[in-house]
Length: 206
Image 1 (spheres, rainbow, N blue to C red):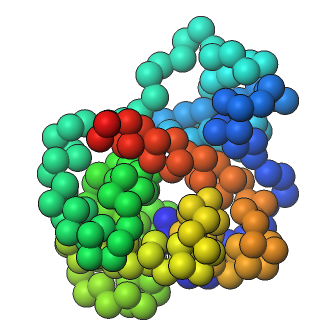
Image 2 (image 1 turned 180 degrees about the horizontal axis):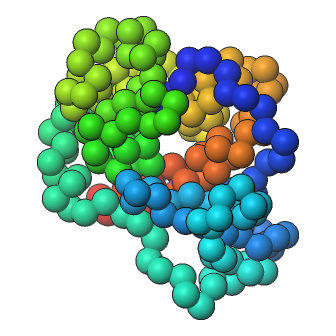
């Protein structure tokens, strides 16, 4: 979710799933899919009883299901809106789709426990900051979210990982972490999840 304020510091960081693809596993990885179809990863299953084993020593668990990906119908429904906002603000369409997939699963009425709303899960302060008048209007929400992504990418020199961390935890959290991904469980899980979606959307275009 897009939050302009700092999130509460975490007691322990999560292993990034993306890193496991390039390096030997250092711990078992667990996952669950929430009611929106969004997949969550952790190496600390005690955080939520819904977590089930996903990888052991870098190998998929026997019961591993295919990773979530939005349907073609969901993607097409908002394709024109995403295309227009991405082109207007010079942000990669695949990245916008990736953020929407991770944030709301293409549900324009989604509301998080922290109050983030709409397709790109804008917090009220972020929506006001970017002139979003109807956070549940897909075009208005995506326009504001893409403008925020554009500013974050500019702030962090085009570093997608830091921009995504800022989108989730707030840019000040990234700055205070020394321009690194803050050690918050949600953010440590969120960044590789969005990047995984991003690569799948790139592959889909190809």
